Amino acid sequence: MARVVPLFSGSKGNSYYIGTLNEGVLIDAGRSCKQIENAMEANGLKMSNISSVFVTHEHTDHCSAVKVLAKRYNLPVYASLGTLNALESGNKISPDTDTILIETEIAIGNMLVQRYNTPHDAAESCCFRVTASDGKSALIATDMGVMLPEIRTAAQQSDFVVLESNHDIEMLKTGIYPYPLKRRILSDRGHLSNDACANELAELVKGGTLRLMLGHLSEQNNTPRLALSTSVSALDNAGLKFRSDYTLDVAPPETRVHSVIF
Image (cartoon, rainbow, N blue to C red; front, side):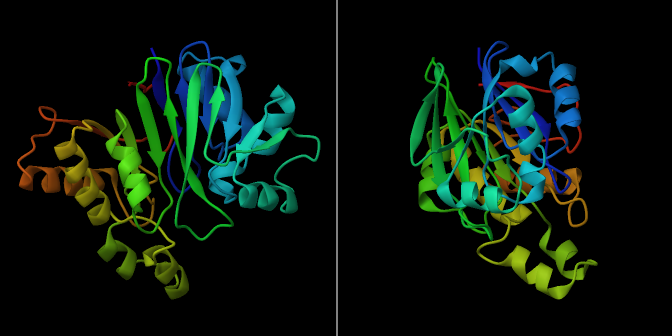
């Protein structure tokens, strides 16, 4: 059975393993190679299980280990053209790494990986949906200022969704970040707030997507309890009961043994 393993999620780095116990892909590699190796081992996974790395965009918290991982394990790297160019120009990938453009979708082993562009302050950011051989699918959708219709449709068609719940708006506004950074985060090319995420989740559950996870929480402008309570409250208001009508968890910032079968 296929599973999603959130290795890391948040301001310090992001990486997800999607696949079986024998074969899978990494979505982003935003911590050190050693940390990702340790996280895989902690979850009973071998690095040899990874067939490829998919990179959503070139920000360090999503690609810091890509250069070393790809070279050490001879892994191909898939991304949009803009992201591949940004990785190369930023020396975040070795010239001899096998880089492959993913335009819409590509088959990897027994899985299908689909790309959806995201509105974020990067060269050409995107998110990925992975469909296993049994037809079940998981979408990892973070780093976007607004929810685009095509991503919403992809989420509605998925069995499991990780959706960004980056910040509490008031915590961000009154926090220590400089004003230009606050404005960037709050913009349409920034990050989804707790409230924006909660509203999306309520509609997803109504449509039948019942397995959910909150991702990419800010360490400065959010807490797991606040993000979770904001979403649960919105779902309660929609007449949907936590752990009865749907499952909802928070992706951990640091590795713990955790996986979701989808």
